[in-house]
Length: 110
Length: 113
Image (tube, rainbow over all chains, first blue to last red; front, side, top):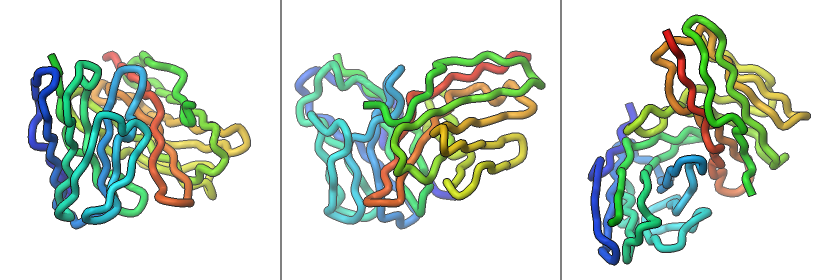
């Protein structure tokens, strides 16, 4: 079974803090993704990566950056957290047309 | 611009009856469609998919129908069970470029005993 893990299930940070969300997949997938899920808005793509050190902006990249130094790990960085970044963050990896998601990180920014 | 739309935010069904979840899309380049199921505090899990060369795909209690001319797909669950209560996301991709998935806003299904 594909396993995608995320470093934290719940996280509480203060406005202005730098936040790191880590994601690891164990299936040697080349493609990895970060989404956020908000009520009424579905899943929106923040960034994706198609290979090590390669990254592309998704639909809502503002306020975020990413890092992919190793194939299995894809990190999402909030340089200066703001309250409007309070959300559920979902990481996924992909093989063929199917994406496999991690359990999500519920981030609250106070 | 919402390219994939799920116009019903919620649906309530009795156990044993049929659940029908609908999804509309606007991009005619989409040629692969998926349904994901999400429980609270968990990541979405893949449920069923369909390619645009087909109009129906079935997997146990789950069937997806695709109407390309109407740019519409639907997920049928028969019979519905209380464990099916979850949020269902429709997603679509095209065979061009990176093949990103575009997700709908989700429909919350509640199946009552």
